Amino acid sequence: MSAWVAAVLLGGAVALLLPGPAATSAPPRPSRLPRSPRGRRRRRAADQAAVLEVCDLLAAELASGQPPGTALQVAGEQWPPLRSAVDAHHLGADVSQALRELASARPGASDLRWVAGAWQVAHHSGHGLAAALERTAAGLRARRRTRRLVDSELASARATARLVACLPLAVLLMGSGAGSDPWGFLLGTPVGWACLLAGIALVALGLWWIERLADRAAAP
Picture 1 (spheres, one colour):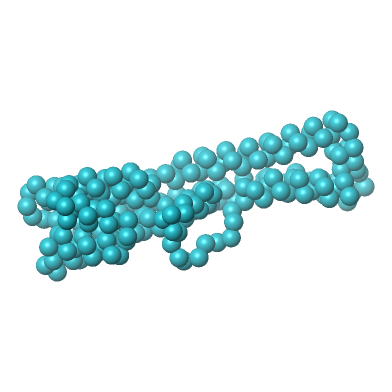
Picture 2 (cartoon, rainbow, N blue to C red; picture 1 turned 90 degrees about the vertical axis):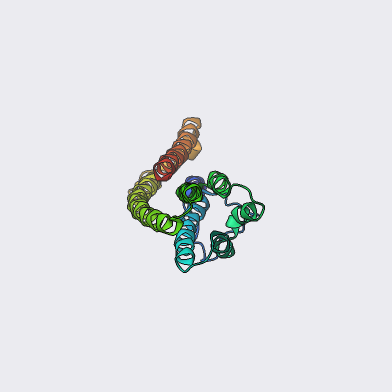
């Protein structure tokens, strides 16, 4: 029984920081922001893909002869968070500033700063917005390829960290199978309890630190 208690304690500490089940293809609701690191990464990746699609859509609409306001409205229908920029255009406000504010409010939409810059330059020069957005979309694709490479490397680091975090439990199970009694020491003595709690805390701290470093490396 004591072995099961220790296994549950150690396994539960590791499971708290393991990724949950894969998300569905449906985007997260704006009113319910994801709290887990994995949920935040999914939302950020979805926003990054949406910004690239918006940039492509704006360039295509402008190249087909649509005015900037109409192109922006079509893009807003494609990606609802862009409605703030659409409203700014309807009110005669600064669209580029609205785009920058949206980029600041949503970490995954930080690439909107480039769209805002292209919009501002074209607004002051009076032409060239479609070409500027096409170049911006090409740059965003290059940045996305780099992000995918970084994410793949970080996924390997996260998987290695979780594997290492499970090793103490595996060692304890192997020790029990070899005829020793590590569970009796861990749960039968004050020193054992202190070692068990300290080990769980260090495992949880290590996994949290790896996740924090990976999130900082993946930040746009």
